[in-house]
Image 1: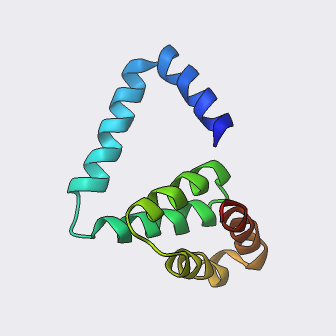
Image 2: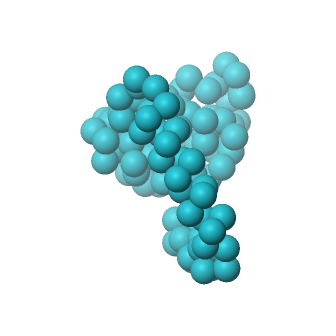
Length: 102
């Protein structure tokens, strides 16, 4: 996650108004747009970032899911759910990210 954080810090410095708007939208959607509990929202984000093969987002979402109380079994289940839609190789990429964070 260090690479992303370095690039993100540069982005925030260069485009603070875009970052502020982006963060506000993310907070609005994550916290106020519906009834799903925090842990469920992070598990969904784990699956979405895994399915879209966004490694850095997946690392962040796994960490946030754990902070929200998700167990490793729940995170693995979220990852397994992508197999039928995105295929086994995509799952294996995501699973390897998860295992490297364990």
